[in-house]
Image (cartoon, rainbow, N blue to C red; front, side, top):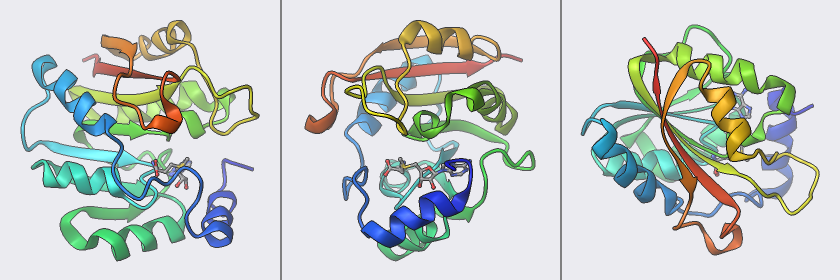
Length: 197
Ligand SMILES: C[S@@+](CC[C@H](N)C(=O)[O-])C[C@H]1O[C@@H](n2cnc3c(N)ncnc32)[C@H](O)[C@@H]1O
Protein backbone atom coordinates (compact mmCIF):
# COMPACT_ATOMS: atom_id res chain seq x y z
CA UNK A 1 0.00 0.00 0.00
CA UNK A 2 1.95 3.00 -1.28
CA UNK A 3 -0.36 5.35 0.62
CA UNK A 4 1.19 4.16 3.90
CA UNK A 5 4.57 5.21 5.32
CA UNK A 6 5.34 1.55 6.21
CA UNK A 7 5.46 0.63 2.51
CA UNK A 8 8.22 3.16 1.85
CA UNK A 9 9.96 2.70 5.17
CA UNK A 10 10.34 -1.01 4.47
CA UNK A 11 12.13 -0.21 1.20
CA UNK A 12 14.57 2.06 3.07
CA UNK A 13 15.07 -0.70 5.64
CA UNK A 14 15.53 -3.49 3.08
CA UNK A 15 17.66 -1.65 0.55
CA UNK A 16 19.52 0.98 2.57
CA UNK A 17 20.04 2.92 -0.64
CA UNK A 18 16.85 2.47 -2.70
CA UNK A 19 17.03 2.39 -6.49
CA UNK A 20 15.72 5.95 -6.79
CA UNK A 21 18.40 7.45 -4.55
CA UNK A 22 21.18 9.13 -6.57
CA UNK A 23 23.38 9.90 -3.57
CA UNK A 24 23.35 13.53 -4.72
CA UNK A 25 20.86 16.13 -5.92
CA UNK A 26 19.24 15.63 -9.29
CA UNK A 27 20.69 17.89 -12.00
CA UNK A 28 17.06 18.95 -12.48
CA UNK A 29 17.37 21.19 -9.40
CA UNK A 30 19.51 23.56 -11.46
CA UNK A 31 17.36 23.17 -14.57
CA UNK A 32 14.13 23.90 -12.70
CA UNK A 33 15.64 26.86 -10.85
CA UNK A 34 16.87 28.34 -14.14
CA UNK A 35 13.37 27.94 -15.56
CA UNK A 36 11.53 29.23 -12.51
CA UNK A 37 13.61 32.33 -11.68
CA UNK A 38 12.42 34.33 -14.73
CA UNK A 39 8.89 33.10 -13.97
CA UNK A 40 8.84 34.66 -10.51
CA UNK A 41 10.75 32.37 -8.12
CA UNK A 42 12.18 34.70 -5.50
CA UNK A 43 15.75 34.23 -4.29
CA UNK A 44 15.95 32.93 -0.74
CA UNK A 45 12.23 32.24 -0.41
CA UNK A 46 10.65 29.53 1.77
CA UNK A 47 10.49 26.33 -0.18
CA UNK A 48 9.37 22.75 0.61
CA UNK A 49 10.45 19.43 -0.88
CA UNK A 50 7.67 16.81 -0.50
CA UNK A 51 8.76 13.16 -0.38
CA UNK A 52 12.36 14.31 0.11
CA UNK A 53 13.83 10.85 0.77
CA UNK A 54 17.44 11.22 1.90
CA UNK A 55 17.19 14.95 1.26
CA UNK A 56 19.82 15.57 -1.42
CA UNK A 57 17.61 17.96 -3.41
CA UNK A 58 16.52 19.85 -0.29
CA UNK A 59 20.16 20.21 0.79
CA UNK A 60 21.15 21.51 -2.66
CA UNK A 61 18.30 24.03 -2.51
CA UNK A 62 19.51 25.17 0.91
CA UNK A 63 23.00 25.56 -0.60
CA UNK A 64 21.40 27.70 -3.31
CA UNK A 65 20.15 30.05 -0.58
CA UNK A 66 16.55 28.90 -0.14
CA UNK A 67 14.96 28.37 3.28
CA UNK A 68 14.32 24.70 2.58
CA UNK A 69 12.06 22.26 4.39
CA UNK A 70 12.30 18.56 3.50
CA UNK A 71 9.26 16.42 4.26
CA UNK A 72 8.74 12.68 4.10
CA UNK A 73 6.38 10.38 5.97
CA UNK A 74 8.88 7.48 6.13
CA UNK A 75 10.85 7.72 9.38
CA UNK A 76 13.98 6.14 7.86
CA UNK A 77 13.99 8.69 5.04
CA UNK A 78 14.09 11.59 7.49
CA UNK A 79 16.61 9.79 9.70
CA UNK A 80 18.81 9.31 6.63
CA UNK A 81 18.36 12.93 5.54
CA UNK A 82 19.44 14.25 8.94
CA UNK A 83 22.45 11.90 8.99
CA UNK A 84 23.55 12.98 5.51
CA UNK A 85 22.78 16.70 5.54
CA UNK A 86 22.41 17.84 9.16
CA UNK A 87 20.46 20.95 9.99
CA UNK A 88 20.95 23.09 6.87
CA UNK A 89 17.37 21.99 6.03
CA UNK A 90 14.32 21.91 8.32
CA UNK A 91 13.22 18.24 8.22
CA UNK A 92 9.74 16.97 9.03
CA UNK A 93 8.35 13.46 9.16
CA UNK A 94 4.83 14.13 7.97
CA UNK A 95 2.23 13.04 5.41
CA UNK A 96 1.96 15.51 2.49
CA UNK A 97 -1.82 15.14 2.69
CA UNK A 98 -1.81 16.64 6.19
CA UNK A 99 -3.79 19.85 5.80
CA UNK A 100 -1.87 21.74 8.51
CA UNK A 101 1.34 22.22 6.50
CA UNK A 102 2.88 25.38 5.10
CA UNK A 103 2.38 27.89 3.76
CA UNK A 104 5.43 28.03 1.51
CA UNK A 105 6.42 30.24 -1.43
CA UNK A 106 7.49 27.32 -3.60
CA UNK A 107 7.60 23.53 -3.84
CA UNK A 108 10.29 21.39 -5.43
CA UNK A 109 8.78 18.05 -6.35
CA UNK A 110 11.05 15.32 -7.62
CA UNK A 111 9.53 11.83 -7.71
CA UNK A 112 6.83 12.52 -5.11
CA UNK A 113 3.91 13.29 -7.45
CA UNK A 114 4.87 10.30 -9.59
CA UNK A 115 5.00 8.11 -6.48
CA UNK A 116 1.26 8.65 -5.97
CA UNK A 117 -1.26 6.06 -7.10
CA UNK A 118 -3.09 7.74 -10.03
CA UNK A 119 -6.46 7.95 -8.17
CA UNK A 120 -4.75 10.22 -5.62
CA UNK A 121 -3.38 12.70 -8.13
CA UNK A 122 -6.18 15.26 -7.92
CA UNK A 123 -5.97 15.25 -4.10
CA UNK A 124 -2.20 15.64 -4.35
CA UNK A 125 -2.57 18.71 -6.56
CA UNK A 126 -5.05 20.08 -4.04
CA UNK A 127 -2.55 19.47 -1.22
CA UNK A 128 0.17 21.32 -3.16
CA UNK A 129 -2.14 24.28 -3.71
CA UNK A 130 -3.20 24.22 -0.06
CA UNK A 131 0.40 24.30 1.18
CA UNK A 132 1.40 27.25 -1.04
CA UNK A 133 0.79 30.93 -0.60
CA UNK A 134 -1.34 32.46 -3.38
CA UNK A 135 0.97 32.99 -6.35
CA UNK A 136 3.36 30.34 -5.00
CA UNK A 137 5.23 28.16 -7.47
CA UNK A 138 5.09 24.39 -7.86
CA UNK A 139 8.20 23.07 -9.62
CA UNK A 140 8.02 19.41 -10.53
CA UNK A 141 9.99 16.76 -12.39
CA UNK A 142 7.71 14.05 -13.80
CA UNK A 143 7.96 10.90 -15.88
CA UNK A 144 6.11 10.53 -19.17
CA UNK A 145 7.77 7.13 -19.65
CA UNK A 146 8.45 4.49 -17.01
CA UNK A 147 9.51 1.79 -19.49
CA UNK A 148 6.19 0.02 -19.11
CA UNK A 149 6.96 -0.98 -15.52
CA UNK A 150 4.22 -1.17 -12.91
CA UNK A 151 4.50 1.87 -10.64
CA UNK A 152 5.47 3.57 -8.54
CA UNK A 153 6.73 5.63 -10.25
CA UNK A 154 3.68 6.19 -12.43
CA UNK A 155 4.05 7.87 -15.80
CA UNK A 156 1.75 10.71 -16.86
CA UNK A 157 1.48 12.50 -20.19
CA UNK A 158 2.15 16.24 -20.41
CA UNK A 159 -1.43 16.78 -21.56
CA UNK A 160 -2.88 14.93 -18.55
CA UNK A 161 -0.53 16.79 -16.22
CA UNK A 162 -1.61 20.13 -17.63
CA UNK A 163 -5.28 19.25 -17.18
CA UNK A 164 -4.74 18.15 -13.57
CA UNK A 165 -2.62 21.15 -12.61
CA UNK A 166 -4.87 23.72 -14.25
CA UNK A 167 -7.61 23.09 -11.71
CA UNK A 168 -5.60 25.04 -9.12
CA UNK A 169 -2.56 26.37 -10.99
CA UNK A 170 -1.63 28.49 -13.97
CA UNK A 171 0.87 26.44 -15.97
CA UNK A 172 3.89 28.66 -16.73
CA UNK A 173 6.16 26.01 -18.19
CA UNK A 174 5.67 22.44 -19.34
CA UNK A 175 8.37 20.79 -21.40
CA UNK A 176 10.93 18.01 -21.75
CA UNK A 177 13.78 17.90 -19.24
CA UNK A 178 17.21 18.30 -20.83
CA UNK A 179 19.47 17.68 -17.81
CA UNK A 180 18.13 14.36 -16.50
CA UNK A 181 20.31 11.81 -14.76
CA UNK A 182 21.54 9.44 -17.53
CA UNK A 183 19.34 6.61 -16.21
CA UNK A 184 16.27 8.81 -16.75
CA UNK A 185 17.27 10.68 -19.90
CA UNK A 186 14.49 11.20 -22.42
CA UNK A 187 11.77 10.11 -20.01
CA UNK A 188 11.25 13.18 -17.79
CA UNK A 189 9.47 16.49 -18.21
CA UNK A 190 9.30 19.62 -16.10
CA UNK A 191 6.44 21.69 -14.77
CA UNK A 192 6.48 25.19 -13.31
CA UNK A 193 3.02 26.28 -12.22
CA UNK A 194 1.71 29.24 -10.23
CA UNK A 195 -1.04 28.80 -7.64
CA UNK A 196 -4.17 30.60 -8.67
CA UNK A 197 -5.40 33.19 -6.13
C1 LIG B 1 10.48 7.53 -5.00
S1 LIG B 1 10.86 8.17 -3.43
C2 LIG B 1 11.77 9.64 -3.88
C3 LIG B 1 12.59 10.23 -2.77
C4 LIG B 1 13.38 11.47 -3.16
N1 LIG B 1 12.54 12.51 -3.70
C5 LIG B 1 14.47 11.12 -4.15
O1 LIG B 1 14.33 11.44 -5.33
O2 LIG B 1 15.46 10.48 -3.73
C6 LIG B 1 9.30 8.83 -2.90
C7 LIG B 1 9.33 9.35 -1.48
O3 LIG B 1 8.07 9.96 -1.21
C8 LIG B 1 7.69 9.61 0.11
N2 LIG B 1 6.23 9.73 0.17
C9 LIG B 1 5.32 9.03 -0.53
N3 LIG B 1 4.07 9.41 -0.21
C10 LIG B 1 4.20 10.40 0.72
C11 LIG B 1 3.28 11.18 1.44
N4 LIG B 1 1.96 11.03 1.29
N5 LIG B 1 3.76 12.11 2.30
C12 LIG B 1 5.10 12.27 2.48
N6 LIG B 1 6.02 11.53 1.84
C13 LIG B 1 5.58 10.61 0.96
C14 LIG B 1 8.23 8.21 0.33
O4 LIG B 1 8.39 7.89 1.67
C15 LIG B 1 9.56 8.29 -0.43
O5 LIG B 1 10.61 8.67 0.40
